[in-house]
Length: 455
Image 1 (tube, helix red, strand yellow):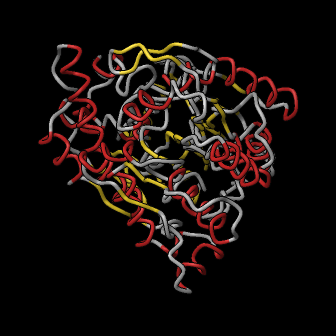
Image 2 (cartoon, helix red, strand yellow):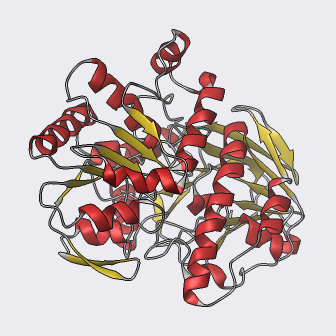
């Protein structure tokens, strides 16, 4: 079997890996490249393989950088089957239309056709089949099994059982995005013990997160300090997982009287819809979160929380006097309603912008975190006078310590031959690869775009 890399190489986004058995061609993920834009120009280049020859697609989870090019794949000829966990199917059906809206807006501003249209989108969604964790799927003479990655609802580590070039039974695991356990909502990340090969993410391959147990305390202090000055807290957030975790912990802080009772606006129609999906899949949540929900405590709602679905409701937020918390997309400030709030509040020295997610190079969020004092938002120059803060403990990605543990456990059977390090900036991927070689004495490579390997 041949494994080829067509995205997610020396970059965090654009995950896209092709398995070729000689009889079938199978993709793992088909994500958007993202950075300074929601959909980078790189997405408009033709695939380096023929989509019409792809028989199956398996998805690790529903983030745009893992599923966002599926409609383009269909547009260019794919007509096969797509498999994902049931929550991922539902999440993707909600997130792809939202992506199309952002892609259309960008295409109009840049003067070119959108990456795909609504017909492509609806057609590719119709090809999706939902499966459960642990439920084997046999296609093309090999077996695929989804395991809980603990990253977002329905996220999966994909196990592939196949015959290697010598005819021996072998296993390769695709990490997708690994979670940052323990999660307040999700179950623990699956750690394989019998890998021959690994394809592992490395977004934080050269870094360690802050202590997760301190993150709620940090959130409390940032809110208290900003409210004391009469300012507003802006939180750019992804519609899935970070939003739901923040709602869960804000609920706790309010119930425990640890922060002032101020309005909290969830200004994201998509996040509101995706929060409802969480309520449909209580069995996917960990014991504490599921128990709270079943006991009648609405873990994603509390007094003072206001859902703003319409544009008109969103515009009225800035008319609300006094301190408030505004959670809005997108998480990297490369599109969405958060841009309008940033235009309004970044010049305010009493306000705070709080990042709780990974910021890729080139994104507005990365520029703000890097200390730029003047940025361009929606064509306008904006002075940055507010406090810029980040809480790494809210990251949904595993850090170096967890990634190394994942490799160590995967090599428990002492048959691990090679690790492919992907989905990280080159410096991060290289650091993780070097650490794997040094500490595990296992070959680790950072593939480049288009690289192929015989397994």
